Length: 298
Image (cartoon, rainbow, N blue to C red; front, side):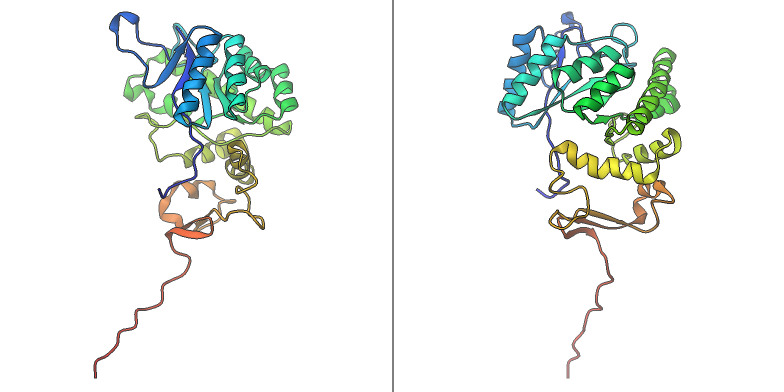
């Protein structure tokens, strides 16, 4: 199937009563198609083994809460025990799968790093100890911050309560500071985000890159490096693509303009000249086609 290179995940894992377990039992709605709700290490192992059968590459977990759930599971709340997280990692790594997790609360970040997570999603409230653990283990972090900005700016028109918006502001401020600290200390950041919401729809992914330049303070080159080189490393395929080097696949986006001067060019698809994947042009063109030769009848 023609399309982008993907590293697949599947149903997520969260402890009962955690961030993703929001439907009361009496409603009998269930969340089975979206998430495994676990209670203890045996459930954690069982969930990962089911994902192994599904053919996924990454296991997504929810060690902490989020600003979206201010009453029960806010962004300073733990939603999985260390023992559950450790069981997920041990089982996943046994089957050569990678593990990531939604980690905002400081202790949740530390638990994930000590359990052996392969990446950290968000890493919002990172203290010195958490940063040291991250650097020591060379674990990449994907802050995913543009969602917070979109929630603050457009959330009200979609009915987000002020309490939730205030939480997103705290998350945005904390996440931006953690991202700056990680990069300054020599750590690795990936570019990704939470999309698919009315106020942050799919297709706006390049806004994440612009945000990190204009609001977090990274240079365009740093952001592009995070999105390409580090992105490929996170997928476990940095030896195949992610940089332009002899022997690697030529995955290239050709743009009309200088993204080093204006990173926001990547938000304008009219500026895209061509998309090359593995050395083959998949969209657009690099040169004007030759004019069609019309044979004249004698």
